[in-house]
Length: 339
Length: 258
Ligand SMILES: Nc1ncnc2c1ncn2[C@@H]1O[C@H](COP(=O)(O)OP(=O)(O)OP(=O)(O)O)[C@@H](O)[C@H]1O
Ligand SMILES: [Mg+2]
Image (cartoon, rainbow over all chains, first blue to last red; front, side, top):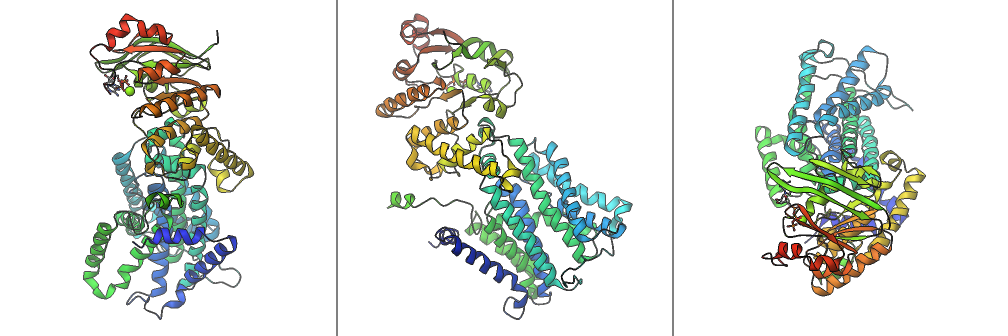
């Protein structure tokens, strides 16, 4: 049977340094060129293609990578991931309108705020496991939205208006309708997130997360400080969500509690599960498909969500572990055994 | 006489109405192989669980390397120098054999997440060092050729051995082996006995739970016998074998019950 994951891994592993650089640069070039392909079959009817690339697609990809650290790597079910997205967005909204700070100055603050709330949520919640953790995170996601809905300083249900766009540099202007500029900016953040996850996965943190996901008690008994690494997973996941939030607010110029509903948490979770929990490429692919599909089939109007749901159900039946599942490939030795 | 590495003093462990350990006192000397035997349900695994911090004892005291283990977090007990295997294999199946050992070896790393992320030299150095050490351990235990295989795909006997290698990865002073020969055939048992002696000769202290009498008697320097949570014997293998109380405890309980 054709196995996309193994095929891809094989090609990559068989390359030398130069080959890998060529593949990586080529792939990035193709992805970066996507905004120019609006005239092709990729085009989305009704919705503006380039704007769809930014939101939902690129935003979903970024958030899915972040959530994957928590769910896919460490096996912690977080149903309130939207909270970190909201915290990033409201940090941008508030500081962007009330202070003279610009988006690039607010970005690290938004990330820090999200990370800090990751600690606030994580430290008590991560003492619990499984279903309990899921319920607490679900509650946290709702609490953040409800606080935004009730706090005068956050504009209640009206939200925050007139959030500034990022200042340009090197002649690049962030006009609110220059979608491709935002897209490329997000692409850089996505590449950074991929770098971070790949880096960590190969070392101590990655092993700690893996061991926690597979058998937390055994991990603790073999010297893994499980609580610390669970909090780290939460905090790093939050940082990515926060970064996405800052950019989102700076792009839409207007945020309200309605943008941060439970539905977003569930959608991002769906991206992770659909694409292949724990496999970063699977998760990215899942986010691209789930972000893109509803807009691609928008001509179906009302029926499109039905079709979307149907595709999800069929896919999860055909490939319960996602499109590109996590399972690692073993070296050639396995093939010898099998024959 | 060499000094004690670990001492259990009047240890009692109650689970609701069940007294799994009742006033148990014994020690393990440095560089010793101590056999821990007893019929099913005698409380052997519970001894491991209280030493490693899975359960907090109801009363008594456990002193390891001169310090009490009361209230010490489980991963810190490991860091102090106690590591175990599990009676029912609990490897991380989706990791390779090498990664299983490396994860345990991370216990003593100075570098953590941040230095790993930014690739600080210390992180790289430790990574390289522990990778080599993990491979050495796999070779030492005789399963070096399986290092790149996922743990869950390994043959049963190799998984049992990997449990030992993984525990050794944490650089313990005291190695706790919970029925490492369960399910082994006689030839494999002989091989394992040799491995356990080799482990001791490499400087580890071993506390061994084992149902196979001939194996325990062959490798142990001393044997402690538990029955219904109580210690009924603590002596050389020869003397324990002839102890009437021990014979009585095992009467009616076939030796190969498990
Ligand atoms: N968590 C627990 N809760 C309640 N009872 C327990 C618990 N753990 C152990 N016990 C009880 O303590 C007693 C000793 O169990 P333990 O697992 O230590 O026996 P063992 O000597 O290892 O037996 P085996 O040879 O079958 O492995 C048993 O009666 C068991 O039911
Ligand atoms: Mg037992």
